[in-house]
Amino acid sequence: MQNMRDEFGKALVELAAIRDDFVVLDADVAGGTGTYHFRKAYPDRFIQCAIAEQNMFSMAAGLAESGIIPIVTCYAVFASMRALEQARNSIAYPDFNVKIAASHLGLDVGPDGATHQALEDISIYRAIPNMTVVSPADPIEMRAMLPHLLDSHGPLYMRTGRSPLPNVFDSNTVFEPGKAQVLVEGEDCTIMAVGVMVHRAVEAAQKLAEEGIFCRVLNMSWLKPMDEEAVIKAAKETGAIVTCEDHNKYGGLGGAVMEIVCENHPVPVERVAIDDIFGSSGEPEDLAREYGLMPEDIAKAVRLVLKRK
Image (cartoon, rainbow, N blue to C red; front, side):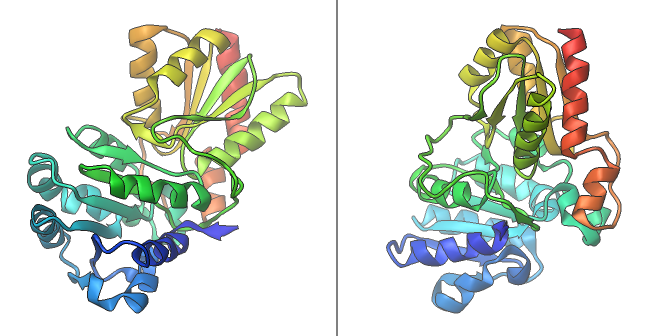
């Protein structure tokens, strides 16, 4: 089990040793985002903006215009709500090269409670023109993404996380930017998952296989632009889809997938997500169980969607 936010901070340190084109901006939450590793190693490239996310995003826009790549780090609720106007008007509208890395996502935030559980951030950032949205499944994928994200021009929103995660991939995995990864092969149904839900989707598929139900599992880490080809292929070849996300059921992965499916090849879709309610305080695993985000809930959704197939 590895902590994505800590691995994010360590990855930035490693990248800074071989490239000098980026700086890190922090809103007094370096301990929560993992960027304290970078602050210690490269204090001259670490800009403390204090608890003032709107100002931090505006600073990032100015830095980007000067040719520096700013990596803005804070909690997802503040990145997607408190500083939304600056993200839209100061960063995305002029198409500035700012990378926003947000931790504390969904119910995985756990004891910090509803005010800090970002259940809407995918839908918010997905709706902003020019904005790329990604959510790696584990620290290995996140580390593989970072160099490409820094090399690609334009505004970006990346979800990191809070709690330790099991690795979905091994260190030899080759990633293709912008593409969904097939983790499990199957032809009865496709399970599409993102972030913390990916390892649970794999576990659900393994349990379903014991019942004779064989599911394809896709890691949908590229939320925008989404791998439409993979979605359409899954719809045509398996005829049913279940989406899984630690996010409100509206506007996130499920919404994005249904947009593609409805426009290209309609099939039944079930969503495993937060049912349009706020979370509560508790341990992440307990909350996932309480709100229906566990492997058994994914398996239940697969059985349900197969009845509609």
